[in-house]
Image 1 (cartoon, helix red, strand yellow):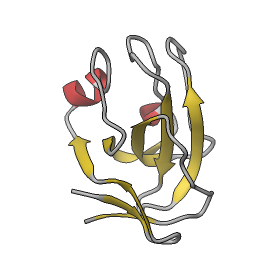
Image 2 (cartoon, helix red, strand yellow):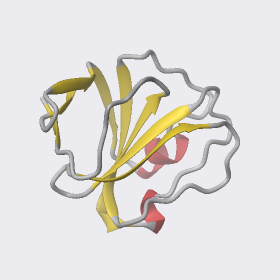
Image 3 (cartoon, helix red, strand yellow):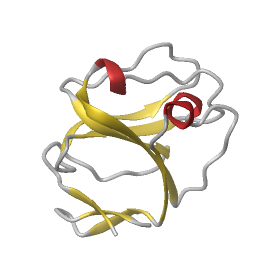
Length: 116
């Protein structure tokens, strides 16, 4: 699967893995690696701030994180998050959390993304 920013007509990641279970969401990117063209998407059952807050304990590289609502619209993002940050939350309730290895990411609030 690819993750595309349809607002800007750009591919964000050409290899996307979905984490839908509680265990896969809990593990996330701990003790893992990502290539620059890969992304992990944590899928929540409902839009929430607390359910979609993350940490970077045991994540071995800086992250770019994008929070999306149920319509895949960007509601928040944070770039170049360092390792071992205990609590990172979105400004608004989100349904999806996109985690990427830090790179030059051209993203804006209100952009609409799509999985293809």
